[in-house]
Length: 316
Image (cartoon, rainbow, N blue to C red):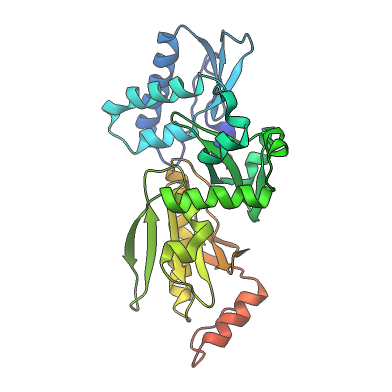
C-alpha cells in the first residue's frame, strides 16, 4: 500500500509530516505516535521512526532492531484512547523479549503438542525469516508455528528436518490442533434477496486458519465450494456457492474484505477466493471510483452460467 511507504516520516528532521493510515483519523494517529515515543523513551531506548516501523537502538544484543507497528496501531485504532498506553506497552514487552527460549521444543515429542497452522500474507516470504510453509493461493501462505503460552513463533526448517514425520504430517497435526482447540463464533450478515454472509470470528490468532477446514467450520460441505475471505487473523468470511445469488455475495464481500483488511489487527489479505475441495482460486476484484470490477477465471464463469436457471445473471 502507498501509505506504508509514507506511514512514518523520519522524526529526527525539522518537520514531522505524518501520513495517516486508513484505520486512523489524523488526530488519533498523532496521539498513537506520541504513545509509542513515550513508551520507548520511558524504557530508555534510542529509536528512529521509519515507514511502518521503528528502529530501536541500544538493545542488549547490541544490534539495532526494526520493529513493525502495523498490528499494534490497528489494535489501538479499535480501542479507547485510554487503553493505548497499555496496548503499546504490552506490544513492546513481547517483541523486545527477542526469540523465545524454546528449550527442548525442537524435539518432536515436545513440539507435537504445540504445533498449529497459521495463515499469513505471502509478503512474509520476503522477510528473510526461515519458515516451514505452504502456498495456499495468490497472496496467501500457511505456516507451521509453535503456539507457546506467551508467544507464537514459526517452526524453523532445521527443526522439521530432525522430526520423524513429513511436512504433510506435521501440517495435519497443526490443523488438527486448530480444529480441536480454536473455537469461533458464527454470525450471519443478511444481504438482499434472502442471501447472507457467514462470519466466523474469535480473539484467537488462529481464527483465520479455520478457513483451511471450511466444511468442518461451516458444518456442511458445498458441492460447488465456498466464497472465502480471510482479511485478518481473527476472522473468516464465507458464503456457499449454490446458485447465482453468489453474485450478490461477491458484491458485498469485496468492499467488506478491503475494509476489514485495513482495520486488522493482524491483517492477512483483502483477496476474495473460491475454495472447492481444498483448492483455492483467487477471484480478482477491486473497487474503482465506487464501482466494483470482478475478473473471475473462466472455470468460475462457466459454473455460474451453468447454475443460472434461467440464466438471469451471467458473469462475462
